[in-house]
Image (cartoon, rainbow over all chains, first blue to last red; front, side):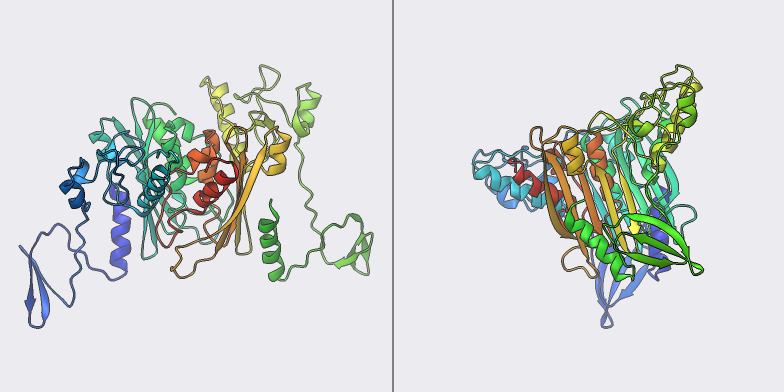
Length: 262
Length: 262
């Protein structure tokens, strides 16, 4: 995520009384005088409770034992019908991989909708209703205190890794029309491909209007829209809900200039 | 708009103390004892002020006098470059017509983004930067007291008029995850074409999460997505923002069954 967006998240967390200690590796966690001590190289923190959030890995042990092919991060490799390397075995859920609609390559994104939809697809396929999934766009949102944080598609780093030539732009817009009371800033980071002009991804941060807005960009990714075509979409406007030009459209218009197409 | 959706709008208005008298034609408005009297056939209302909202028409008088071709509702007929029937005259704004991305036919939708974008396109074209507009999807939103009301694409009646064979479905979902506090109902009315399977339009009503959500369907319309492909899009999920299956996806899944494709 671009610095301007992650800075906003950091400030939201800190302004709510949460202290952040970034860039420290935890060496050990040990009991200390009835509480816990989190020990880093140049920092020791006392705590009543320690919650460890270091990401998750696919639970594919059973599949590996059964000899099924695994892929990225050892997730069970499945085709668009959710069929594994064994014609008689299907897999769905956080244990299975998926196709990314932007790269066309395999990805592993353990989120609820991906898993839930894949489960239905497996049920359809094993019951004789052929079902193939389009893939995932990497859409994800969360709320941190009063801030909405959203993303879809690729980050700049992911785009580079996938072989694109990403160009990105950050814009600051507003959640409501200029004169409408209660308007707050919305930041949009939008990424396009220099060669094809394709929209590759977008990230948004705002106190309102970020989470649901990201879906417009997600649908664009499913259709491999160029930034130019996306900039022409007829997005909703009314003063309580945004400026005449939706923040996503402003981002697309500005990104187009950098892509030499605006 | 489907009855279940318009009923919600009506209730929102009435619960805020506004009395509605529907189905009455105003015969005259006249002074009466220092106030105003609105006279209908079987109803007379006294008022301090009368606001008349009976829609608008394009202001194309000058264009007609200049001999330019006008089209639907006498809006100035323009091509995708906003050029009128005279090679040296362009038109943009509420006075000009536009192409509808769903029907491919001309339409006249006097909304801010349409007019604003067309103005920029005219400026580009007359300054030697060839610019063609994709068209409008008919996206519109408004807020009535605490209710968000949104639409994009065609209504059932508009779809029939355009030669489609519309099939529609209404679903009731929620604005947040089941167990999340503050969740309120969201109604979605989604319309598809029986013959092609295309998504034709959607309407939403809810206390939150209706206005921005409609943009996902609008982008789908720009890409002539089928309801089936739209049902596969990777829309955002987190408990504060909706159920695992976004209300638009639930609507698409249910509509698919009616279309015989789900």
